[in-house]
Length: 449
Image (cartoon, rainbow, N blue to C red; front, side, top):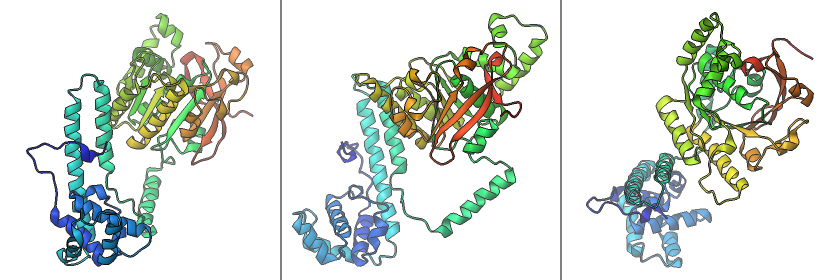
């Protein structure tokens, strides 16, 4: 349904500027080149008066065919469409040029028309939300999601989308390079804390959708949690963490074990020594001060996840979001086949990353056939759309004989990290050390062949 169909409050006059609308159209008729400027800001539906919408549509038709726009050509175009009388007739079209002194200010006029259009749409959206609120057959969360989407769409309305001269771009580019130089930070994105990985990716980049995939028990959650703690504790960068499989208490208990370097089994069973409590207290203090925000609702629906992520972004300024894990997110369309549900979730998370302008990192299971071999993009479980939507795909892999030998007494287990896809950077393999005792990953303590 078009926003034009939503009712406006009956006791208020819609935001509208007659002079700006006629001046915009008149300026185009005076100067054919003004069309290119105006279409960066306006579409026919942005004009309030129906006659003006028809006139502007006629102008666009002529422009798309490469024909010049003047009173004669526009009148003939409207006549051929059967819209001339609805557009005010030949006399009204001809009068538009007398309502503007010069075409030089056409961009200013177009901005006024756009602003009024945005205000009308906002009023209509508000009216629609109010009406939908009384419909008890619709889930309230769905109404909230729709409202948020419409408001966010309005923030992008009328962006010029025009091209830029390199003269405009180069000063900003040099400024960004100088900023990196002075901060001595070699990463342009959010650093994971793993040297080789960050060297390959330059940190997780804003608006990117990142997948971390592995078979069960290889360490997806441990890797994501280690990254989150590196980002929040070491760099003091706000992090959002959605854990759909574990409780927040269990997750933080694992984080305490990792940060304090205490055996996770002894923490769970309470078999701690008096000397352990010093490390435990210090680690808890560091975690307490970290800007880490955890959501542990099981069976979290996609709408709720998006709403909570927006709230984390606006209220706590989170710079990255982790989701453990993707296929546990509940789809709003339960009647769809599972692969279509996963595809919908994947597309939505990609869209969320772009909307919030932060990296969104989602964990994913791999197919059972992956056992015993290095995973590939085709091994991502449930839906091929995950591979398509992701900007970066990272796999964890250990040879089967190594995996069988992993136990709590192992000091360090070498694990291969496969960067299988990266739209804007190199792919390849690196190695990290998994510490079973602390359920965490670290950079390798020494070079290995």
